[in-house]
Image 1: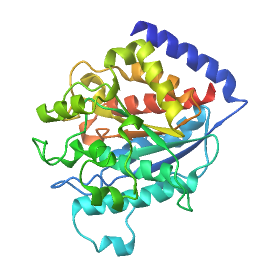
Image 2: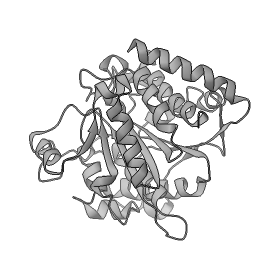
Image 3: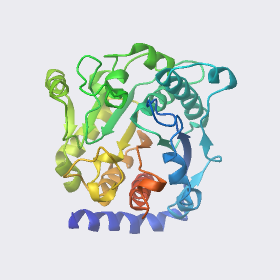
Length: 320
């Protein structure tokens, strides 16, 4: 951990020198729709991160917003539709449109997302251009959990435990297609990071599909395996989306998260790994999901952790 802090400090110091010469173009989009039942439909998590003064901080880190921060909402016609899962999928389609509208060379798209179900919109936005032409998108999914359950394997029935399986075309196809992801991601284009808490049948699915992954220790050490996984994925795809559920972090940095798991990396560790990942020009998007907000994070610990991660990604893009 001490080594990673030294490495991150070195990268940040170098990047500060580069800031004056080349600002990184950044597009930030908030998607508050998570599809959860029995809770308010709109999450305050994305607003909480923005309220830290995110626009100002991005500038201090060497980024430049290409437009005001976007805030996804259902259209008037969509508002008449029912079903939490269905409405979340429609919001993801709108999220995809917003991602697509902002895309340009050298841009880092940052999604502030209610939860991991919102990865569908980011993937759809990156995959198809305005004419429907497709490119190959890689997903790096960093989470304490696999989120690879299906309705047949889940113990809880929670949709938030299924989004990667949905994106891969293994379940709930209507949700995926409503979100705008017409073609599922091949398993070869998905890499997991930091997973350490799987349901029994979900673990069977990990073994069955021989998933590609890197560990918490790989993150802490910026290991050869982490570098190899990223390089190999970049060789296979056109662009890479890195998605982070904040429960991947050490529980001390997400004290309000009800799904936190022991033995996670620090935000400094993960920020250094993100700097490494975003040095590759194919890594074009970052999603931050499930940040405990307001009343669950009275000391701002979780929010600061999320900001550390965003900074790490921008610094990586600066170092290209």
